[in-house]
Image 1 (tube, rainbow, N blue to C red):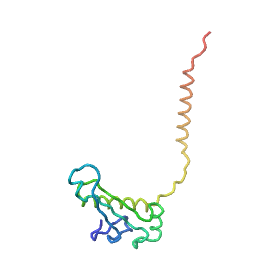
Image 2 (image 1 turned 90 degrees about the vertical axis):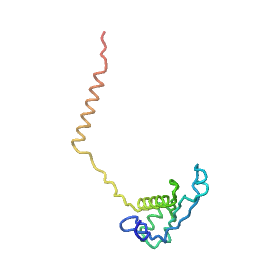
Image 3 (image 1 turned 90 degrees about the horizontal axis):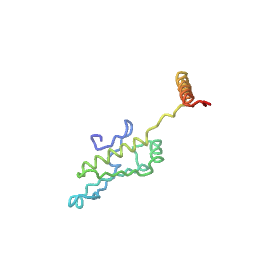
Image 4 (image 1 turned 45 degrees about the horizontal axis):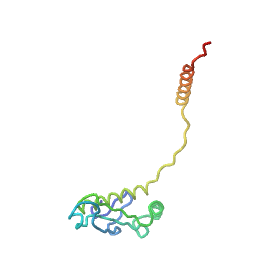
Length: 138
């Protein structure tokens, strides 16, 4: 979270606070009077299509992976403030994961040492099994 309330997703992606919409409600589950009365569950929504803080490439990448609107909620804590922070952190992780470009794997061949070790292990296993065979004594 930046000083002005903006959400820093990556070094180049910062989402202003006015592009995030919040809603609050009661947390589910046990908790007695506090859980029934306090609106501590925090839900943050980010409309990717309407965002002006993303480039066209970033916008399309997020839409392809997460959809046009990304929604994250948190009700782990008893405090609304802590749940807000959790929800923002989860949104940051979700968006950063969608923007991450993984380098394609280049297939490689095993080295000569690895091939020799594998073949030697096969020879040893074959010899071990050959030694287990009992001979026929007549």
